[in-house]
Length: 238
Image (cartoon, rainbow, N blue to C red; front, side, top):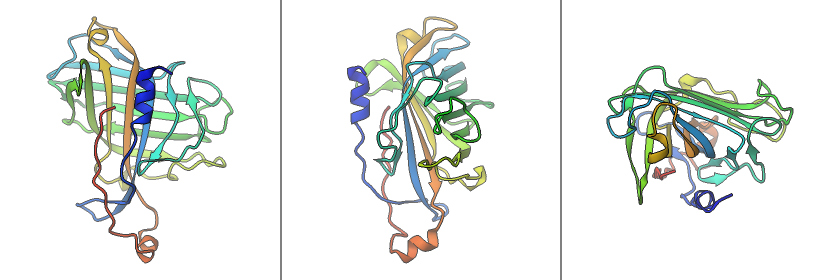
């Protein structure tokens, strides 16, 4: 793992706590999946910059890694590491259509991990899928590194499924309609690599996916004196 990746993995400190959404008052947990070494491709060409119109894809390959998942900023995967395709691996695919610098219709993301170690990505594994919110999104320079771009957009219609295998908990089977606002996707790409024409790619793209998932028993949490606690969520750069 190179120095850049070590820095990404090490930059993880947030305040623990429960989060309440202002619109509904529902208590939720913030779940983050940070991926390293994905592949971003400029499918249609054109210069990726503020105001970009075109299509970007982000996919997994043999160098892709998911080494932890954070719930309210705390790693809950322990020593589990999912890398590349195949047994104990991961599958990742995102397609982002942009029009004048914001997300266009038909943009989606999905990923799963081979949590039961059978080499298949099926209903027994943990998975995530969502659509991007049309009209949201931003493209700009990465803070402190003008050679890179940071892109992000909001997510909607999320589905987080726990395959049911022992030792795994991705929040249970949660219906898309039950998710509050606040979920988003962000990633960084190298300007020179991604802007070399149609099909150009950056093979070392880092991605963070954040999901706001309602806690299943707010009444029980209230009786434990936890309901109403909140934290201010800071969106850090990938």
